[in-house]
Length: 116
Length: 114
View 1: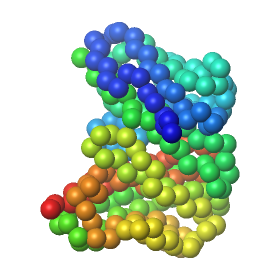
View 2: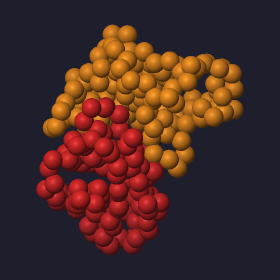
View 3: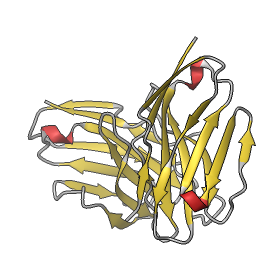
View 4: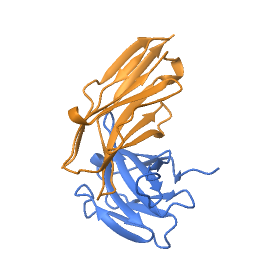
C-alpha cells in the first residue's frame, strides 16, 4: 500500500536560488493538490490538478511559483528566486474525483523548505 | 468565502481523560464536506473523518466521536480515554461542493501526559 510520497523531505537553500519539489500521488487518484504550511498554522491551498490540467491557483501562488503535472501522474512545484518568506512545509495531497463518498484528500509527508 | 475557526490553540490532559476539540465553520454552500485531520510530531497529516453536510448523524468510532450541529455550524471532535499517542495537532477542514480545496482551521495542539 503506497501512499503519497514527496521528495526531498528537507531542503535548505540560500535566498535567490531556485528549488524544485516532487510529489507522487496515490496511483488511482487523478486529483493532486499542493498546500503550504507555516509554523503554527493550518495548511493553505496553493493549487490543484485534475489529471494534467491545472484547474485552480491560489493568490498565494506568486509568479515565482510554478507547478506542473505533465503526464497526469507525478507533479513538481518549482520556486524561483527563493525568499526567506518561502520557508515553510510544502504538502502534497491526492484524491479521487469523488462526490460524496470518496473525496477525502490524503497527504504526503511534506517537504520542509528553509531559505537562509 | 469559507472560514474554519478552532478557538482552542492547546489542550493539555492527563491520560484517560476525555478531550473535546471545537470547530466552527462558515460557508455559503448548501452542500459541503467537513473533515478532521491529525498531525503527529512526524508532520504527516492523517485523515480521520469526513462528514457530508446533508448527513447530520453523529458517529462513534472506537475512542473517537463526532458531533455535527448544522444549526450552530459546529463540528466538534471528542477523544475518549485519551492516550499519550493521541498527542498531536488536530485540524478541522471544510470543502465546498463546487470547489476542491480544503480550508483548514488553525489547529488545536493536544498534549496527553502520562
